Amino acid sequence: MSAKRLWAFGFLFAGASCVRTSFGVSPPDASAPATSPWRGEPRRLSEEFTLSVAQDVRRVHDGGYVAVWADSFDGFTVRLSATSLDPNGAEIRVARTPETGLDSVAPVWAIGGNGQIVGLTSGANNPKVLVYAPGAGWTESSLNGYPFTPVSSERTLGQPTTTVSPLGIVTIYWTEPASASKTISTDDAGEVDKDAGAEDAGADDAGLPAGLWSVTVAPDGTVGPPEPVWLGDVVIVTVTSSASETTLAAWSTPGGDVLARRKLDGGWGTSDVIVGDASAAPQFFPYVNDPGDALVLFLFPGDIDPNTVNLYSVRSHDGGWSTVEPLPTNTGRYEDKVVPQLQVGISPTLAGAIDPQGSAHLVWLVDAGSATRLVAAHAAPGAEWTDDGFLDEPVSYIGSRYPRVDTNSAGTAIVTWESPGRIQARRFTNDAGWGATWQIDAGPFAAPAVAIDEGGRAVITYGRALQTWIVAVP
Image (tube, rainbow, N blue to C red; front, top):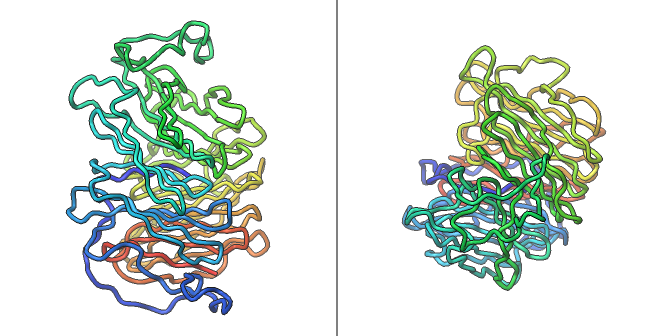
C-alpha cells in the first residue's frame, strides 16, 4: 500500500446531512455477527463533531481488515484513528491518538500486512512516529531531530513517506536537498560504495548528501542510522510496499530519468532506470505485490493540449522491466484525454493494483466532454493491456471522481468511485469480466478506499458529510 499525504483538508465537502438509499449489494449473510458490516449497511466510524479529512483500509494477513482515518475537532490539529475488523467484518476495537498527537497539517501514513499503521508528522526538528498495533492501540516515538540535522528552525523532512513491515519495523524515507554539504562515494551505477565510508554518515555531520535516504524505527522505539537508498538530486519520490516485506521506491531526477529500486527479503536490489531522458518530468504511481512484481503508471504532459496528460505504464515480472507502454495499447482512443492529477493521493484521477500472480488492473478518468468518465484496463503478466471501456454511466455534470481498485490472488478486483452524489462499486472476475454497478451510498462524499479478501468480499471506507463511514460488499 502506498503512503497517504493529507493536504490541509483537501477532502472536506460541504453539507451536514444526506439521504439514505437502498444498496445494490447481495442479501446479508445470516451467519455474520450482528455487528458485522457484511450486512451491507453503512455505518459511521468517526466521532460526531469532528471533520474527517481522509481514510484508508487494507486487508491483513489474518484475513481481517484494518481501517485508518484522520480527523480534527478544530480544523488545525489532525488526529489519527484506527479500527480492526476480524475476517467476518466484526469490529474489534477503535483506538485514537491524542488530539495533540499530530502537530502537523500534513501527516503521512502507511498500513502494514499485519495490521500495524504508522503515522508520521513532518514537524520542524522533531518528527513524530505514531504506530498502531491491533489490540494494543497507539504508541508514540519522537525522533528528536535525529538523524535529520537541522538546517534552520524551519527544517522539515523532504518529501517524507513511510512503510511498516509485518514485524512492526517502521522505515521512514525522505529526500536531502542538493545543498547538503557532505559527500559519499558511489560506484558507476550510482550505488553507495560502502568501502568509502558511507556507513559513517550521521546526524552529527554537517549534513547528509543529496539523495533519497531511509531510517528504521524498531518496535521498541530504537532509531537506526540513516542509510542512503540512492545518492543524487531527487525531484519526486514515491515509496510503496506490499503486505509482506517487499518495498518499491521510485524517484525522478532533474535530467528527466525515473528510477526504481526494490527491497526484498535479501535487501535492496539494483537501481534501474525505467524511463530515461523524459522531455518533461512525469508524475508516477508505483504498485508492488509480495513476489516483487511491479506496476508503475506515468502521466506525461499532453502532446496536443498542455492541459491534459498522456498515460503510460512500465511493468516488471520475474525481475525484469518492460518498455514504456501506452494505455490502452489496442485503441489509443483515450490518448491525451486523461484528466490531470491535481493533488497526488488526495484527489486521484487514476489507481492501479497488481495481484500476487502479476496481473494488473488500472482505472482512470478521462475528459469525455461534458463530464469525466471512468475507464478500466487489465493485463496478465507479459500480455498487452486489454481495454475494458467505460465503467460508469454518462452524466451531464461533474462526472466520476476518486477511483480506487484492489485485487486478490484469484484475479478478482473491486473498483469504487464517486459519481455525483453517490459512492459506487463494480466487481471484476476473470470469467465474467466487469459485473453490474452497485450504489453503495448517497450524499456529499469524499474519496473512497477499498480492500478485497480472497473470497471476493470487500470493505469500502469513504467520507460522507464530513465523517468517515464504512460498508462491506459481500
